[in-house]
Image 1 (tube, one colour):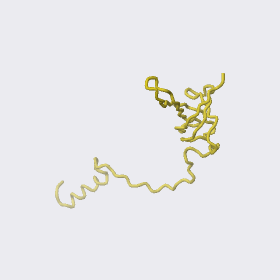
Image 2: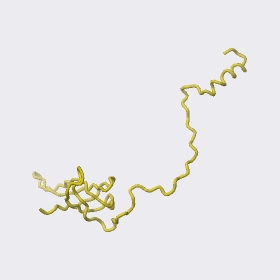
Image 3: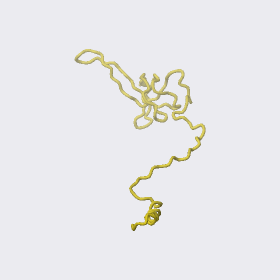
Length: 129
């Protein structure tokens, strides 16, 4: 039995070696006799991570590769070369860490420094605390 080949558009390339392809088909409505677009999403294997969102690709049925993945991308745009760039930009140079900004303290408890200064201030005022 020949393998099915479908044509669709990549809608997600977030996973490693996997793309999600939306395949649209047009069917006639049984009552209204108008053509209606129906779409389904397939998870397809992309070995070299070469396809990005928006690419028009052809996928072919294959053996199960994982729980949801039983399709393989066989064809795509000409500019989709292997190693077209990593998904996440690589850190070229480590950025020098700036001095951490002073954090604001909550005023729920009296700081230890203030406790030490409080009796001295009361004695200077001359009053009994």
